[in-house]
View 1 (cartoon, one colour):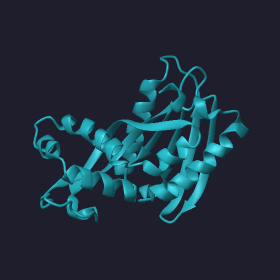
View 2 (cartoon, one colour):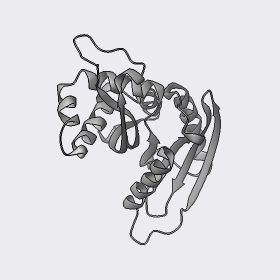
View 3 (cartoon, rainbow, N blue to C red):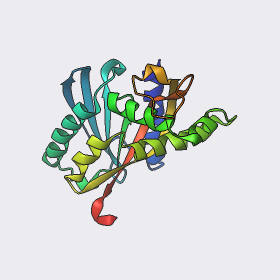
Length: 203
């Protein structure tokens, strides 16, 4: 059910970025890799006059390793020019944040944040979403991916999150930071994420 909802949200997010009269994708290509947690698919989608993106997912929604997926991404980036796609033309990546290292980093950062507890108890659940995106950037949730893209003169930045799932800190396996009370604390453990891709030369 979670995977189905994430897939629907991904479709809605992508549709919002396309021209009103967008046609079928000009180019699609899928790479498949065997990870320790199952098969990982990375799909390139390119629209004429629209965005060029990569989506990363695992069949069945299995939890994967961010470090391992960085290796898969590296291979895809090297292969893209063979399909007439320059790396500078990439606009964004869509993925889920339920990667082992990302969950640990974001949960630990949230546990140290006084803002986080306030956001959890607000009557407006959407208030927590910008914080989750901010925590992902500040905690280096996707640091191995960022390192791979920097090798090609590009940077990654979490632009937004949707369908965030909150679970007890104790389920993450992360170590509670010093002077933090993690008992009964709920933290983000999964979300649909959009990471925007920028040229380092333009920053």
